[in-house]
Picture (cartoon, rainbow, N blue to C red):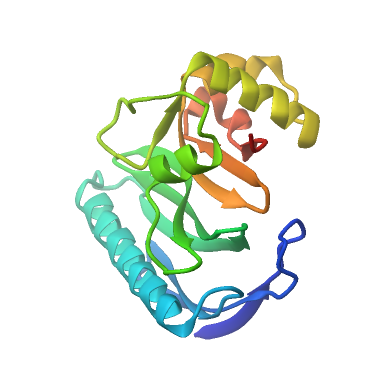
Length: 218
């Protein structure tokens, strides 16, 4: 089943919505994967839209591979599952971010993540998380992620403190119990309006802290 939807970005400088189609895929009882196809993006020409759609198709295929690996690691008699759902499409001055929410139980371990594919509006090219970070926060410091996923960002101490302060001021997120988690976590990032958004990796004891945070542009 395919549904055509639109997304508006309240803080975006572009008033027109992103138009896209979401298709549901359920290859097995334990797996559900949504595929997103862009139809029209303000500031992005048709060729660039096509280029971005190729990346989104590859993203769905990547999630399907992860689902198969999840199933292969399942313990007989114990529940497992893999769900990848479209979350939103948001615009920034130079970028389009398509965000997915993934919820899994693999090898007995639950995991909740959001990850994005970020595209340059002019070209439709995929933008690496480190390049996005350096463009929007050129003076901020990042560390090498401890995991092999190169799209994960680790923040330097001062940058993590800025994330906590800015999220408190703008998003009204204020929970000191989360400070250690936020200072030591790795993040997936995307651009939303004027902000750089950070979503920390899942850590079950700190699951109540896992939400979207931000840093104001420099």
